Amino acid sequence: MSTLTIAHLYPQEMNTYGDSGNIIALKKRLQWRGYQVEVVDVHPGRAIDFHQTDIVFGGGGQDSGQLRIADDLAERGEELKSAAADGLPMLMVCGLYQLFGVGFLTDTDRYINGIGVPIDTMPMSASSRTTAINAAAIIADPRPGSWLVRLGSS
Image (cartoon, rainbow, N blue to C red; front, side):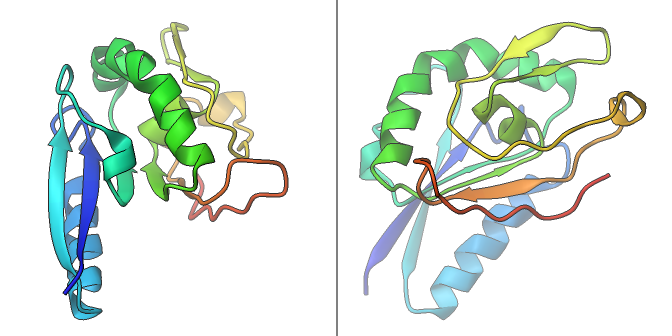
């Protein structure tokens, strides 16, 4: 039986919308297909080689959570972009979806820089700025012509 490793980015800071449930669902669906699954929690400052993982998952968080992980994510940015370019599947929900892109403007007008993984964009009107964007993207190939799946909007 093959083992797949899921890197779970910032499970404490970015878990506002029950994203640990997404990990449980991913793990169970992979087990149903005959895989053993190892989940590696990636906390700020923890060393990890993303090229040694099979899937990277990141969840949603309030502005305060995004601010707490922003510097750590920026330090990992080039490695994550490299891993995405090499075809590592990534599933980002809400806050980390935003921070994998160009960035995010908080409701207090503070801008948090993203790491610039090329992903599709989702326009947000001024009236929706204070509501959560329920978006997910599977980044299969970040080069032009790549595909992604987005689920939901607000």
